[in-house]
Image (cartoon, rainbow, N blue to C red; front, side, top):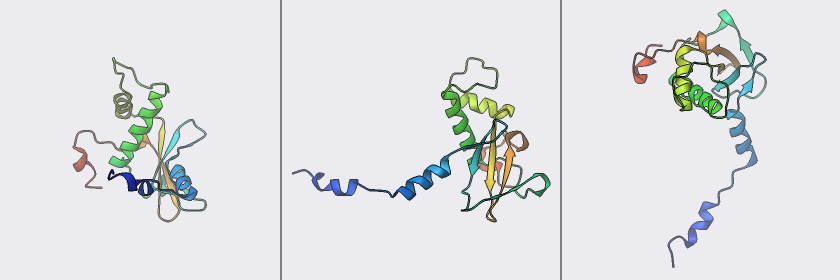
Length: 144
């Protein structure tokens, strides 16, 4: 008799529909009217959130390593699904390399939405955020 005969009960885990729905909702991207996609940074609280504009922003204009990873992954996925490339290609075929090149040039058509604890949010365009490519990633965001 095999050791794996009794493992069937432990392998069938059922997640409720609420769990699955909330996971999908937090990972989805929302589109704005200007053609740019919104990438959520954090989870929105239940109910409607209020937008903070311009001078009312309270977060630092620095792209975090988590936002950078999410933006590069999202844009690489878009490029792999035949989205138009916004930079001149010099033989690059890897979608992640192309997304990194677009990030360096600041032409990625994504907006970072930072959800704050007081149920407000801030939308930041990539061109508005400071991206420091010179320092290593672990030192880049220590002095915010």
